[in-house]
Structure formats: C-alpha cells, structure tokens
Amino acid sequence: MKKMMKALMACAIAGSATLAAANAMAADKLTLQLKWVAQGQFGGYFVAKDKGFYKEEGLDVTIKPGGPDIAPEQVIAGGGADVIVDWMGGALVAREKGVPLVNIAQPYQKSGLEMICRKDGPIKTEADFKGHTLGVWFFGNEYPFFAWMNKLGLKTEGGKDGVTVLKQSFDVQPLVQKQADCISVMTYNEYWQAIDAGFKPADLTVFNYTALGNDLLEDGLYVLDTKLKDEKFKADMVKFVRASMKGWKYAMEHPDEAAEIVMDNGGQDENHQKRMMGEVAKLIGNGSGKLDMATYDRTVKALLDQKIITKNPEGAYTTAITDAAVK
Image (cartoon, rainbow, N blue to C red; front, side):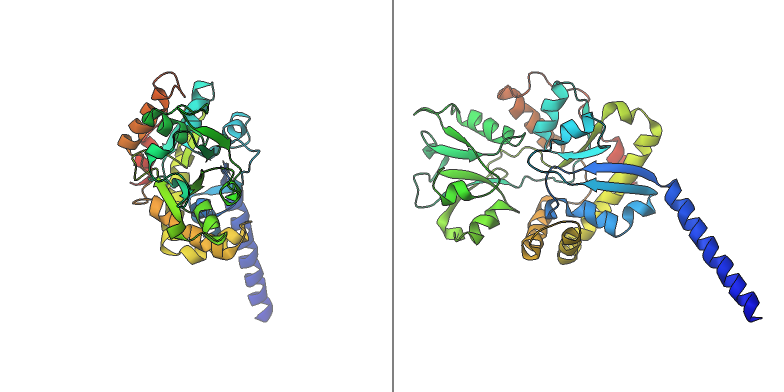
C-alpha cells in the first residue's frame, strides 16, 4: 500500500512539474524597457511581475532597467524591447524621425515635473526667470521646459532677454553648489534629494508643471505600430496592460510592500523608495491607464508651438488596448 501511495505521489509531482513546464513554455515572452534605473517610478511593473499578474495572463515579462546612456526609443527601434516606458515628448520626436512609436496606455495621468529655486535667491515668480540660469535635463526630458519657456516668451540661448540653460546632472548638486538659480526635479525623486541635502520646504520656491498647466505626458507605454498589426502581439499587449495596471493598483494600495519589491529588483535606499512610491501614487490617477485626450492635445500643441515637432502626428496613439484591457 505504501509503495502504491509513493508511486501515486511521484506521478502527481511529475505531472505537476510537467504542467508547470508546459505553462512556462506556453507563456509569451515580452521585454519591457524602462526609462530610468529600477526605482519606485516603475513600481507597478515590478509588482505585476513579483505578484504573478503577468504570469496569470500567460506572459513571461523581462524588465530591463534604463540609465543615463540608454534611450528607450533606440532600444525598441533596434529590437531590444517589445514595449517601452517613455515621455510623450521624446516618443513623438522619435516618431517624426522614423521610429513609429504608438502610445498604447498612459499609466501616469499627471506630471511629476517641477522646478525648484532657493527662496533666498533672485527668483520668486516666473517673471524673474529672465537673465538667470535654469537647470534642465536632456535626453528627451527637456521638451516640457522648452515648451514652458516658449509660452513665457523667453529665449533659451542666454542673454538678458532670455534664460541660460544648464545641462543638469540627474541630481540636485547644481542647486547645492549654486551653479543654477533653479533646477529640475521630480516630485517623487530629486525634490526629496534636495530635502535630504539640507533644504527645508520653506527654503524652496516650487514651480509645479501640472499646477501651472504646463504638464506634458510622462511615463506612457509605447510599442512600434508595425508590431500592432500582428493580432497575436496586440492581444499580448492587452494582457500586458491589464496586468501592469493591476500591478499599479496594488502598488498604490501597498506602497511599502511595493518599495520592498523594487528593492529586490535593484532599487537603492529603502526609505527613499517607500517615499517615492507614496508620491508616484498621486500621479497614477484612477489606475485605468487610459490616455486623457485633453492632456494629449496640450502636449502636442506645446511641442508644435516650440517646433520640437514640425507636424501634427497621426496614429501616435491607440485606445484599443486600454479599452479591451478594462473589459
């Protein structure tokens, strides 16, 4: 009897292993390229992978971190990713240059971009920018800034009638060392680096892009439109978006656990990641991942007005993926 039970258990274990192997083989492999290094900014994707939400959809997702020398648009153009996280300004510029990127979902419904200045410095209002030095990130992050300056009628080549643009490092040192009168920060990242560097909130004048109506769309999901013609790939994107937004909703409800998952995937400084997750949650909106057309139109208009792009983009987004994902 014991021998028979052992044999049955062995068969059951073997059967389970075979089934697991079959499921693993059946899972569709996808690669997601992030815009920056592993951090709470991308917490929803790490949670979706850790919690098995992608696996439940029959997907085997590899998440590739970004960095200062990694342009997601180039990675996907070269076949190194199936889907990327990108800011819409960079995506539309790449599209006009021949990389046919399409926005399939917009997890970030608000901008996290700000400019901060020392309160004891010369800049109190937008009217004070003229003639001063402002720190700006490049690599596709500069477009919202240039659109804002264009709206204010300020040139960006320096001189008394415009502003001097400092190509800013991805930290707050230009403000600490007084290399710039104001610098770019994200609400969920560099702003808190400034606080950690010794500034108090009362020491800073803050210009929030969203509050000023200057926000352009950030951290959307993009694929190549040529791949969307494949119905199988399109179906996988519906599954990917559905699982990703499930991951984002979980991360919003459990920010500390999400931060720990980010840490397990290469994030640095647990306290910083926990704080970041709390701030990022404020930008995700209702968690549907749907593209807000008013913000899209404002983004396009700002890029056109500044001549960052030269023509109104056609086919640069689709709502079909999020429509199917939420059903």
